[in-house]
Image (cartoon, rainbow, N blue to C red; front, side, top):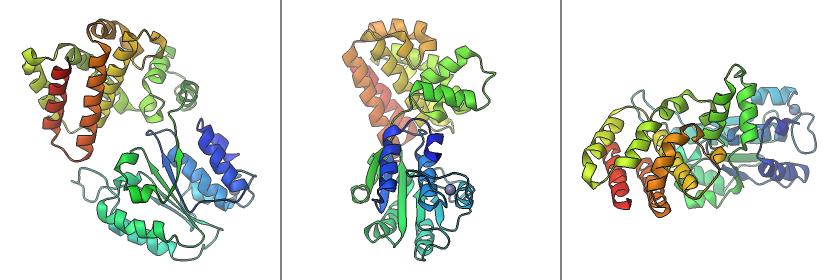
Length: 336
Ligand SMILES: [Zn+2]
């Protein structure tokens, strides 16, 4: 019943449902896949199923006292950790060692009310190194009657020792119908059908991208980025420095902008290989994308996409923003 509330992710739901019905549960799970596709929601539904007072064979009832307490995060055997800003001026939210120690203390007791203590660690890649080391001890010697669920949209940033101690459950981008259903169910009925189409197309199967205002903000940079992809070259270094400086100076995170860039390059490669316009992420900008796509060989576009991946990795490791963007555009010049 309660798993049905989550759209898509049939395989993940099936694996967890089977584990529940056969009572063959792992001590630790790692839910991994793109951002905003239901990992956290399914982790919470799974926690409910593990403690439900009148469960179905493969999931929770969703309405009993225990289910409701988990929904409201007041169940004494349900723990939820997510990254927080340590100080108001800290740039990146993190999960710190104190958070892990506090969790370990709570997991040391027997289940208070339910059958199983469940700890969800959302965005587990945001644990700093000290926190990771502390948490590894819990993974190595899991407390009794406890199930740990880690979620991450960036599995490459987790320690291999951590990954190897969890059962991995893969999450996929949501299908367009699911994104459409979510857009329409969130009181967006007044949205112009054309806008729904554009949002579905640009979502890349991620709910936050479909809904978010930040999505509309970074979306406004797209025409500028198409011009940049079109024009940047060793002869137009002025564009390179101008754009890098402007984007690096702002306080907004660069990762959505880079995602946007990747989407544009992907669409150009798609046009170039004769794909149907209906499948473009940015189908509203077809008229702008098409002429640029025609001038770029596929191999160049693939090299550009690689350069964006490298920049994303560099920035996740605290690289200097402006330098990282300049390097990206230099790589574009070289590819072209
Ligand atoms: Zn229940």
